[in-house]
Image 1 (cartoon, helix red, strand yellow):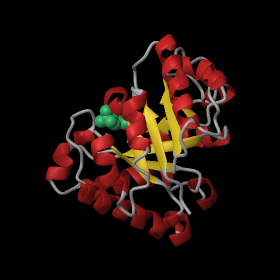
Image 2 (image 1 turned 45 degrees about the horizontal axis):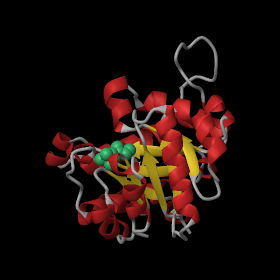
Image 3 (image 1 turned 90 degrees about the vertical axis):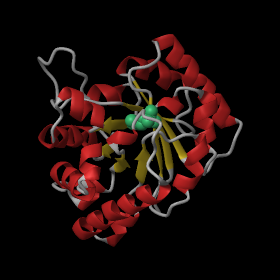
Image 4 (image 1 turned 180 degrees about the vertical axis):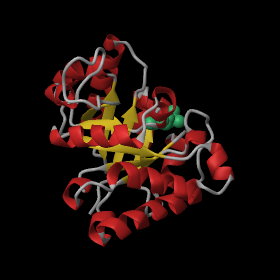
Length: 251
Ligand code: 13P
């Protein structure tokens, strides 16, 4: 059966010292408590190696927020999937709407990143989601299906099975305006159906589909209670142990 996962996306927050402290405190809190989901933190690149040395990854998984679309070489400022893996990180967020929107990441680029992540045994947390105008025009199902198909449906069933999907409606990210649990369930079911059509029921049933966008302790339980919502990708509320733990215990 698919896993329930609560993953934090720190985005561009926390200095190295603050990040290490947060990771250590979270690791400590998870040692004190039995939880019913996998917990992951995705941190800026510079935190990865130090955080990896401080946490117990059987309790708290570690990932990056991005990786390069090239293997290695003269790409100033980029960080490769192999470099991410060499820190001890096991996950990588790919295709976040902020990367698509502000850094021009297309499905073509994301396909390369996914391939390189998998080659380096990283689990991609692959983000899809519509902007407000697309939802208002009734195009949200079409948008997420296209994002899925363009970047991921070239993968073999075996490789696709290694992917975690995160549905993040762009209008709900950092806005305090979360999708209702019914809206989340409706589109997660559509995403799972699209995966079923391509890879079959078994692969689809085993794919974890997380919800992201203003998810917090006060709404996590209702969201996670939906049959096709397998956890959350958390931004703002992942930046404090108390807030993040409040979401984790919703399972
Ligand atoms: P917020 O939880 O801050 O809305 O961010 C969601 C997100 O973008 C996680 O990747």
